[in-house]
Image (cartoon, rainbow, N blue to C red):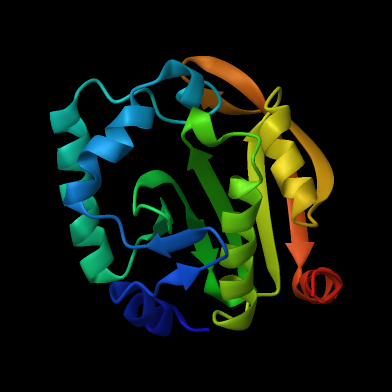
Length: 196
């Protein structure tokens, strides 16, 4: 899919629905829900960003994202619970590479929802969107070495661990080994049939 079509599609962020979740555009009114987990060091330990210092920072960040949504250059969904509408994390594409039909998926979840299969449920919805709507060939995910929980999510959705790039990123002043996993369109279709 061409970049212009991707921008047009994401400028009107489509909603994705699963059994327990609704993935939708992030809103400024999500600030309190987002800040509740984004301010915690255990959440950002294996992420590229640091804890949000206060609620106003989170609110300003969400306001900024509205400009990116409007331009169709932001591909991340709010992960919300269908039962109460609360935002409990995010999941989406950190990058999309149209010429190579590839993308990278990323996700973060509030700690009280870890270990319940929610991250995998959200990632599966995003993978399906990527392969079915964006016509991608490959979707990959990265993780900082030591983040075994994130690797388990990748494996749970059918991704293959490809290995580490040694000290390939300087994160918060420390050179870190970065692990890569990926799934191809045909592999995803095969696992989707198994889940029916």
